[in-house]
Amino acid sequence: MVNALAPEPTGRAAHSRRSAVPAAVGRGRIGHRHRQAVVAYLFLAPTLLFFAVFLFLPLGFALLLSMSHWTGFDLGDIDPVGLDNFTGLFADGSTFLVPVLTNTLLFALGTVALALAGSVLVATCIDKLRFQGLWRTLYFLPIVTTVVAVGNVWKFMYEPGGLVNGGLNALGFGSVAFLQNPDTALPSVVVVQAWASVGTAILVLTAGLKSIPGSYYEAAALDGAGPVTVFWKITLPLLRPSLLFVCITQFLTGLQSFALIIVMTQGGPGDATEVAALEMYRQAFAHGDWGTASAAAFVLFVVVLAVTLVQLWVFRRRGEDA
Image (cartoon, rainbow, N blue to C red; front, side, top):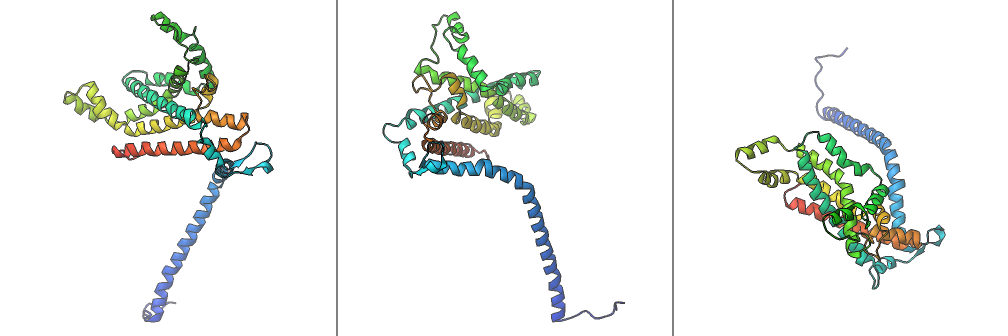
């Protein structure tokens, strides 16, 4: 039986007892956190393994190929060449910088401009109509349609006897060789790419419009602001987070576009629609030069990263915390 009247230990014994309790508690907490970390990593192991197999290993192999010469068959034939593949992309006589990379940037810029303008206009109109779900579904249909089907349909529409030229002829204009003329081939494909990707942008912007408090519009109506003023002073500034997302995703899609171009023009006429992704495909699978294709892929990655950082910087300068 414990004597309740026993005096409390003093001196070194009391200090040892008081210090032993926090130390034991601290070791228990560390052990508990360690067990939690182990369990967490066990749950993350499948995802980490997936990224290691399908992201990090291919990325490392691509980096190795970008500094090597390889025809794509025997791993024993990989011949290190240093930075020769990168210097070859920008050497005199190379078409990678002009027109390939130039076409890629123009294609991406045109896609972003058309898709952004069209999606903002359509999303604003849909937000004021009834049956909004129906309209959003209709505009989203091109997203779920295969690129091959979209490209072939528009290819026939651009033909001299197709629907587009038929409409121009009905208005009194002459037929235009949209895909056969080097001056109109790239803009024609840009229009198709923007049309095919506008559905996703509309969904994002519609969600952004729904998040704008109605009190702002009520206050603007009380002040007598017109629709144009409301759009420029309220709607567009408050849509900035959604616009940032649309700009980045559309630009990335445009820079990596490949399937639509190969279906509609195959890079022609000449090299009018030759883009970086198509050039990488040809270097690897048509010419068997995997080193040059990998080097071009890393150059395109740097371009994509730089453009994304510039977009983020511009929006943050305007007060948007992305």
